[in-house]
Every structure is written in C-alpha cells, then in structure tokens.
Length: 243
Image (cartoon, rainbow, N blue to C red; front, top):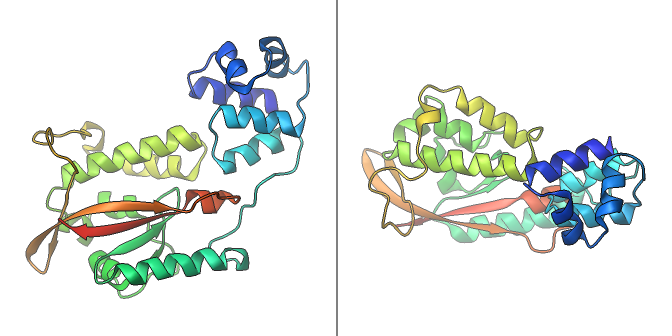
C-alpha cells in the first residue's frame, strides 16, 4: 500500500514527517494524512514525494503503482529494441577503451557487456547466456578471486558499494539479494572498508595477477545523463586504467 511504502522510504532515509514535508514543499498535516491513508495522493504528489526522498526511477515507479497509478518511467531490458542506442553507445566506449578492460554493469552488478580485455581479466572468451555477476566473481572461490592480490581491500570496498546500493534501492531490490548472497561467505562481515595501510591513499588500487605477473589498476565509472528509463539510470560503465 502507498502509505506503508511512503512511511518505509521516509524511515530508510532517516527523515521525519516535518523534514519530508519541507523537502517536498507540502504541509506536514497533508503528509500525515497521506501516511495514515486519510488522504489519497495524485500522481504529481507521488512524484514530488519520491523526488524529495531521492528515489531512483525504478522505486518511483513502484511508489506510483502502490498508489494505484501507472508507472511514469520506462523499464526496458538491456537487450530490448528501446535500449539499442544505449547499447551502441556503451559498445563504442568499451571498444575505445581498449586495450584496457571495461565492463557495463547494472545496479545489481550483473555484467551486461564487456570488451575483450575485460573478458580476458574474467577468464572467459565470451559472456555466457546466464549473466555473470561482478560481486559473485569477487567473493566466490574461483579464478577471479584467486587473481586479486589485495582481495581483502577490494572485497571491503565492494561490500561498501553493495550496502550503498541497498540503501538507495531498498531491501527488496536485486542488489539486496546479491548482498545477502555474498554475506554468506566466511569472514565477509569482518571486512573493513578502510583496511590497514589505506590511510593516505588517493584511490584504492585493484592489484590483479595476470599470467603470474601482478598488475595495478584504478577505475572510473561513467553513467548516462538525464535518464528517463529505470535501467538506463542504473547502468554504469566501469573502465580500468593502469596505475
């Protein structure tokens, strides 16, 4: 129900009714009526409150549906015809970044696209039909985890990114399920976001062993501007640069 969803999102954002009312420029009395189901919102009011709560587009759609309205934003699959221009743009970026690795990720860290250098880093010749998940590759026993020299540092930072994803998208989101998966691995909860020796570093490097030789990388993250589709907002292109 809308009132329950609104109250839950407000609590997740650590906002009082007064704080949300001020941010959304509505009266605290009207917000109280909305949360107690004594008043029903218009679609414009739902979107105003979602904006004040800094909800991603997917979660704004969810709030609209909970209030009995149709979604306002698109929610297309990566391989759909509607996403063809974004796919082409992403593929151009991946190609231009060669010979260095670059990958396209969704909000749950599923790998949607990767250039040849990234696939070599992941130890695959082509992306499988069942999508690989970057977080799973980092935490599960296997070639990728074994190749990360500074695994504890990288895994600690990945946990931070996963928790931030859950904070942004909510406990029912796909990224929350990924976080639950990786937390089952022994010792994960003890990982620190800032391990010993990190103080004073500008960027946390990824130290990766390739062919028996240790290499060092830092990453940049690119996103699409002015998205009007839930997936388009969530897409990030992570590019690896030699450190």
